Image (cartoon, rainbow, N blue to C red; front, top):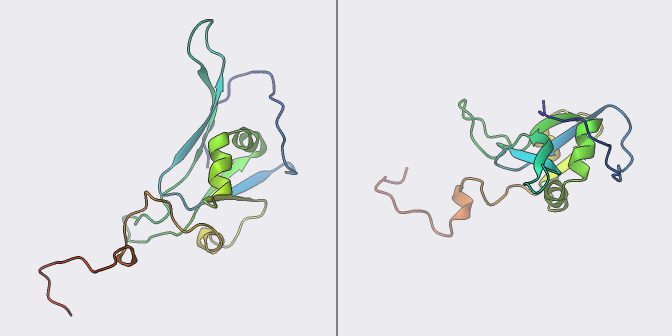
Length: 142
């Protein structure tokens, strides 16, 4: 579940696509977790303060301790969190580049949704097909 910290503040005017009330299922093919932050005004003359943040799970294309490598990862957010994400420039850029997609219905598996997304970002670990020539090792061919 996504984490959020929201302090009371006047509601921002945000274009909220056509999301109805309820849960939003965010699928990600990013290799690391992403914390999307909304910044508010800080003390007079000071730096901006974090007003709200939403954590979207990553770890796609990263092997788990059970040696399972998911192609996509699911994070569930509510409408208030979705509103914060929609106004975040980085979240929108990740969406436009195909690393994140938002669905209103939960799919059977995140890997199923990830099949239609950008497969991996540049921070994903290298795999055999990333090498033009196989790496040189002392191991004998099998």
